[in-house]
Length: 337
Ligand code: 2RA
Image (cartoon, rainbow, N blue to C red; front, side, top):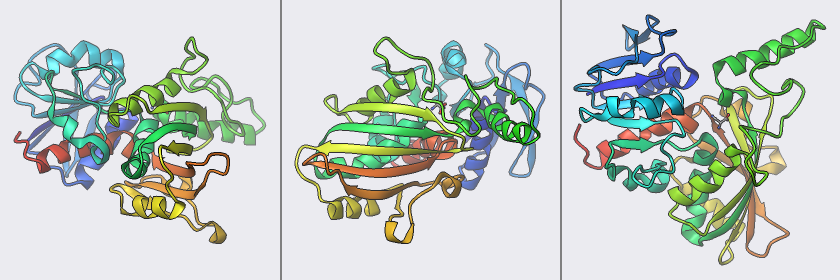
């Protein structure tokens, strides 16, 4: 199989290289593409050096079977036709096509079969916060349909890219030296702080990040009536997002039922023994494949309410791994490339 990575030098692009190798994904030839700035960079994949080519409107994607793209929505929109015109399947990590009716938005553990409806040869990878949330919502929703969700996110610096992670580390170092911290990737100093804004505000007082969780969850779970109210917060953590979730189901779901369903759910690890101080934390979940769930309890303010805590690696399951798992799901269910 001939596979391409677009945005190879970015944090997610680099994670694609690691995940494709870790997953032993069947690749006969790997092509790397990037901006003029990253063209010429070389990365090693399975012992072989691969050079980044500048992404251009040409026939470079002829014979490519799958293109994993993560270079921003603008680049995805501009190059979608160039990438797919010869038949390549574009699995896009940007927000460009997520809410297009003719583009499936897929989390394999939740709606993997949607990946087979690709009239434009494009599949959209959901936003990282949505991915880890719906993986945990699915097993509960299978017991009783979820009516509404409230979620507070605690989002790692990695969501803003590799340079943002570097800035967070540098801020602590600068402050430790008594220097003024560099503040370029976030609106404010992130070190020793939290910032209650991820992406820009919309007219209803929610940010675009929060509206992504509202809109994407409905599409992925085929649940137009499932409402999500999110507050997305940037926290001084490197690469795993945490989420505090409160949900209400149509009929009662006990904590025991929820715990059992989550324990059996694909892509979920239940790590939940509060008496022993056992609950998921971003420091321990970074670089892990599954989504970790803990603090499972009845919501004492709502008759049919449950509350729990979800932690997932933002760059891995929140981006590169989910995209690769989409391709793996398709292959496992008969897709021939
Ligand atoms: C963030 N989810 O965390 C957004 C984009 N990756 O910044």
